[in-house]
Length: 394
Ligand code: PMP
Ligand code: GLU
Image (cartoon, rainbow, N blue to C red; front, side):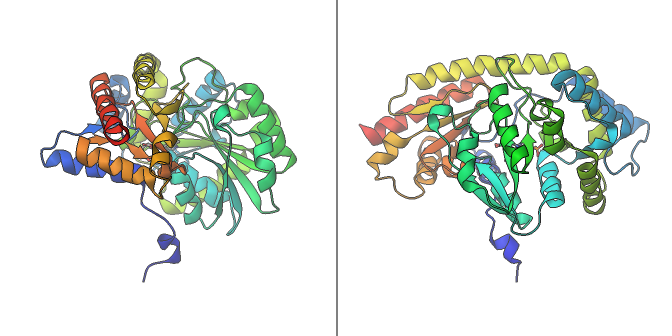
């Protein structure tokens, strides 16, 4: 009865676990939730005020498909001042979250069966969005020694005449790894030579602990021309439920994205757009405070993980996740299939700690923990993880 399209995709693990946690909490169970990547901060006051003000002025009618002009102008200012990228207003399309931007972009760029290069580990929704638009995910392996950051050499074996787009998530969910400028230059050169677009998902750009973030589109004019930068407000200003993101690309692609959006949603909620506008205009101090807090959590969580035996992890330079390698443990279970799901199910059922199985990111020997929650929660959660590991290993 249903389409082949829908039968080829799986529901989101991250959203699924989060719903399970909510059910457990509703039935009175105390769950330590280290699963979803959702900031535990509130939307800053000045951003909210901008939305409330717009409602009081009855700014609630249909508006421009690619987004409010004042918001797109402000996004251009931000891209110029913070990312060193010079965009015009008509090169920006504002959508209902970064997920929506990614879907619009792939709808605009791909034909059925076109191949999208997807480095592993990948954020959970990329392969499913790729399949939804009838394109084909091509999974790219890379080296743990390089924090799973890809190099052109990793891409070479996968290039075919159907290769259309590379998805580059920087900083990475789930590893927190950040590409250096030199690494980006080599990837950009390779993509230009092979006529491959880069979808640069930079949604964690603000959550970067050493001030070393470089936007792909800032590398050169030709880099900018092949790059569709995706960003959003969910992580930087905790606007997860308000659903707001944007893409920046060349005019032709932006126009195509806007045409698609015009038929699907028209434009994102106007109130959310005013809140986003307020966030860009007035909330850089609030953002700095949140990032400082994430950094101190990163230091604390890594110290704690260092004391847990049998596990290893990728040291996160950005975002709010730790990607933990459980190979020494799964070895004891003969690397059984769906190991990470079984591990996480037991951790949740027996120890009331929620984390995301690595299989959601294409790596079954891993789990991901999020530190977008208070110190108390992740420290207690890690104590229980330690207990679980010693129960199954010792
Ligand atoms: N990209 C990455 C890498 C993410 O982790 C997420 C999760 N929020 C998104 C995109 C989607 O974000 P949004 O809430 O803006 O749709
Ligand atoms: N991106 C976040 C995560 O990976 C939020 C959930 C989602 O949209 O997948 O946990």
